[in-house]
Length: 137
Image (cartoon, rainbow, N blue to C red; front, top):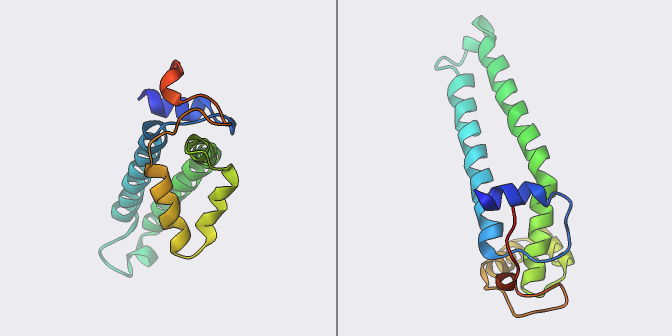
């Protein structure tokens, strides 16, 4: 839970470093929340009868509201996700600009995934090794 709180406390912090757990825990929690909301939207918003939205428009309304909630959640977590990703790249002594490798088809996301899984390096230009930093929430 401390990593998730730290995720939002460092909303606009693009400097420094983030350990693997500090990166992965919030991203996994966010993925879980979005998955639950999506499944909820499917069960609440999709009728069993394909023509039910004509007879009962509340199915469509519920589906739209759940999708709006997902959209605002993604909007809320976009900047902290971006900043934690940049800090994670700093942790392995890479520039934050490496995040643009996500735009390379297939190879870019795979390379970044491998980088995100690497252990923290020693002290580098972005700061001391995260093990030496006192963690405060």
